[in-house]
Image (cartoon, rainbow, N blue to C red; front, side):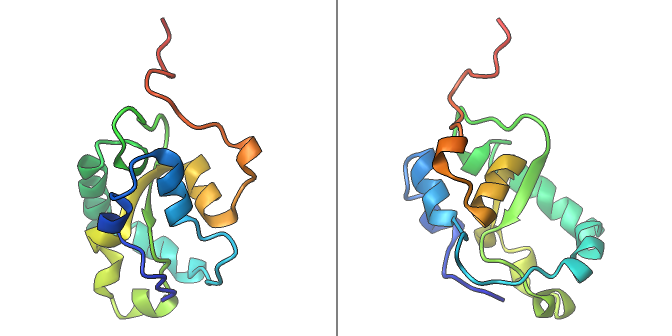
Length: 131
Protein backbone atom coordinates (compact mmCIF):
# COMPACT_ATOMS: atom_id res chain seq x y z
CA UNK A 1 0.00 0.00 0.00
CA UNK A 2 1.18 3.47 -0.76
CA UNK A 3 1.33 4.72 2.80
CA UNK A 4 1.97 8.44 2.85
CA UNK A 5 1.74 8.61 6.64
CA UNK A 6 -1.54 10.51 6.52
CA UNK A 7 -4.24 10.03 9.16
CA UNK A 8 -7.72 11.21 10.11
CA UNK A 9 -6.49 12.46 13.51
CA UNK A 10 -3.69 14.46 11.96
CA UNK A 11 -6.05 15.93 9.34
CA UNK A 12 -8.31 17.18 12.17
CA UNK A 13 -5.49 19.48 13.30
CA UNK A 14 -6.20 21.60 10.21
CA UNK A 15 -9.00 24.04 10.87
CA UNK A 16 -10.39 24.74 7.43
CA UNK A 17 -11.44 23.13 4.18
CA UNK A 18 -8.48 24.32 2.07
CA UNK A 19 -5.89 23.11 4.60
CA UNK A 20 -7.56 19.70 4.89
CA UNK A 21 -7.78 19.37 1.10
CA UNK A 22 -4.11 20.26 0.76
CA UNK A 23 -3.14 17.76 3.50
CA UNK A 24 -5.04 14.90 1.81
CA UNK A 25 -3.98 15.69 -1.76
CA UNK A 26 -2.48 12.72 -3.61
CA UNK A 27 -1.88 14.67 -6.82
CA UNK A 28 1.61 13.96 -8.08
CA UNK A 29 2.16 11.14 -5.57
CA UNK A 30 2.74 7.73 -7.09
CA UNK A 31 0.23 5.02 -6.29
CA UNK A 32 -1.67 2.37 -8.25
CA UNK A 33 -5.37 1.76 -7.92
CA UNK A 34 -6.46 -1.84 -7.28
CA UNK A 35 -9.55 -1.32 -9.49
CA UNK A 36 -9.44 -4.88 -10.79
CA UNK A 37 -10.17 -6.14 -7.27
CA UNK A 38 -11.83 -3.25 -5.48
CA UNK A 39 -15.36 -3.53 -6.90
CA UNK A 40 -16.05 -6.76 -5.03
CA UNK A 41 -14.61 -5.27 -1.81
CA UNK A 42 -16.75 -2.12 -2.08
CA UNK A 43 -19.90 -4.26 -2.42
CA UNK A 44 -19.15 -6.37 0.67
CA UNK A 45 -21.39 -6.18 3.73
CA UNK A 46 -18.36 -5.38 5.91
CA UNK A 47 -17.49 -2.36 3.75
CA UNK A 48 -21.10 -1.14 3.59
CA UNK A 49 -21.32 -1.21 7.40
CA UNK A 50 -17.94 0.49 7.78
CA UNK A 51 -18.93 3.15 5.23
CA UNK A 52 -22.12 3.94 7.15
CA UNK A 53 -20.14 4.27 10.39
CA UNK A 54 -17.69 6.73 8.82
CA UNK A 55 -20.46 8.82 7.27
CA UNK A 56 -22.15 9.05 10.69
CA UNK A 57 -18.85 9.97 12.36
CA UNK A 58 -18.29 12.75 9.79
CA UNK A 59 -21.94 13.85 10.03
CA UNK A 60 -22.30 13.50 6.26
CA UNK A 61 -20.05 16.50 5.74
CA UNK A 62 -16.95 17.18 3.67
CA UNK A 63 -13.85 16.30 5.74
CA UNK A 64 -16.11 16.17 8.81
CA UNK A 65 -16.40 19.97 8.76
CA UNK A 66 -19.59 21.42 10.20
CA UNK A 67 -21.51 23.44 7.60
CA UNK A 68 -19.96 21.54 4.67
CA UNK A 69 -22.79 19.05 4.14
CA UNK A 70 -22.42 16.76 1.13
CA UNK A 71 -25.41 16.75 -1.18
CA UNK A 72 -25.55 13.73 -3.42
CA UNK A 73 -23.17 10.80 -3.38
CA UNK A 74 -20.87 10.52 -0.36
CA UNK A 75 -17.54 8.83 -1.03
CA UNK A 76 -15.72 7.25 1.90
CA UNK A 77 -12.14 7.83 0.80
CA UNK A 78 -9.10 5.83 1.90
CA UNK A 79 -6.67 8.54 3.03
CA UNK A 80 -3.68 6.30 2.29
CA UNK A 81 -4.50 4.49 -0.99
CA UNK A 82 -5.12 0.76 -0.96
CA UNK A 83 -3.13 -1.81 -2.87
CA UNK A 84 -4.14 -5.19 -4.27
CA UNK A 85 -2.18 -6.80 -1.42
CA UNK A 86 -4.27 -4.89 1.14
CA UNK A 87 -7.43 -6.36 -0.37
CA UNK A 88 -6.03 -9.89 -0.76
CA UNK A 89 -4.71 -9.97 2.82
CA UNK A 90 -7.81 -8.25 4.25
CA UNK A 91 -5.53 -5.63 5.80
CA UNK A 92 -6.80 -3.70 8.82
CA UNK A 93 -6.21 -0.59 6.67
CA UNK A 94 -9.33 -1.43 4.67
CA UNK A 95 -11.56 -0.54 7.63
CA UNK A 96 -9.31 1.61 9.83
CA UNK A 97 -11.22 4.80 10.79
CA UNK A 98 -7.87 6.62 10.86
CA UNK A 99 -7.59 5.89 7.12
CA UNK A 100 -11.13 6.92 6.12
CA UNK A 101 -12.88 10.25 5.47
CA UNK A 102 -16.18 11.35 3.92
CA UNK A 103 -15.95 13.47 0.77
CA UNK A 104 -18.02 14.43 -2.26
CA UNK A 105 -17.18 13.08 -5.71
CA UNK A 106 -15.78 16.49 -6.71
CA UNK A 107 -13.45 16.62 -3.71
CA UNK A 108 -12.49 12.96 -4.18
CA UNK A 109 -11.40 13.72 -7.74
CA UNK A 110 -9.50 16.80 -6.57
CA UNK A 111 -7.65 14.72 -3.95
CA UNK A 112 -6.59 12.19 -6.58
CA UNK A 113 -6.09 14.31 -9.67
CA UNK A 114 -5.44 17.82 -8.38
CA UNK A 115 -7.94 19.91 -10.32
CA UNK A 116 -6.76 23.49 -10.67
CA UNK A 117 -7.85 25.57 -7.69
CA UNK A 118 -9.42 28.11 -10.06
CA UNK A 119 -11.93 25.42 -11.10
CA UNK A 120 -12.77 24.41 -7.54
CA UNK A 121 -15.52 26.22 -5.66
CA UNK A 122 -15.27 25.80 -1.90
CA UNK A 123 -18.55 24.97 -0.19
CA UNK A 124 -19.79 27.46 2.38
CA UNK A 125 -22.35 27.04 5.15
CA UNK A 126 -25.88 27.57 3.85
CA UNK A 127 -24.99 27.46 0.14
CA UNK A 128 -27.55 24.73 -0.49
CA UNK A 129 -30.54 26.56 0.96
CA UNK A 130 -33.27 27.12 -1.61
CA UNK A 131 -34.88 30.11 0.15
